[in-house]
Length: 201
Image (cartoon, rainbow, N blue to C red; front, top):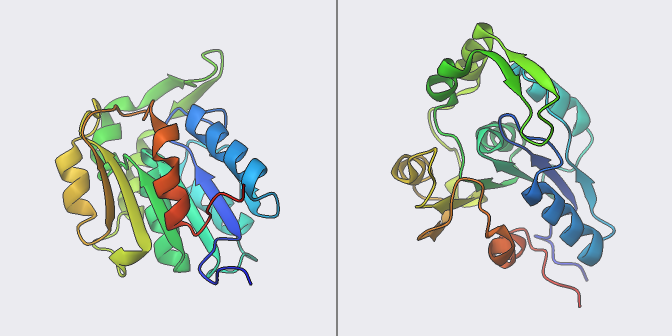
């Protein structure tokens, strides 16, 4: 019998200026493909508008079983994943999640380049900051449904702020590492166990 807590539908949300081509997204997709080929996996390219991004996601997962779904989000994607998990009641794994992106991204208004393809440009508009404010949540309704993977070595976001935001959640605190979690692969066992997705071989 399958584990009743096992995830059957998994959503991955990338960060600001990132894409489904991120190393973490690709590693996660590869692990799912190898060990859990029957699992529904979706890692969409998110539009720059936070509201449009969440509309895209909520439409895409409209028919997913909320008790068997989970969402993984990195950086800004972690902020989004928190919002999605609060709407659906599903599990969430947050990788160095942005806690206050409206504050942090206000200084990035203007033309931006994609991290994985500098020829791709997009415009981050001032109204997107207000959209981020509107997606902000005061508190987590069920902190036990969250796993926060937080690197003390994050050079962009304050790990103490992340720790305070996800108080009461399952925490995987990393002494060093960095914002991009270049050692992501070694933290996969913790993440997969939380999702009820152990190795099958």
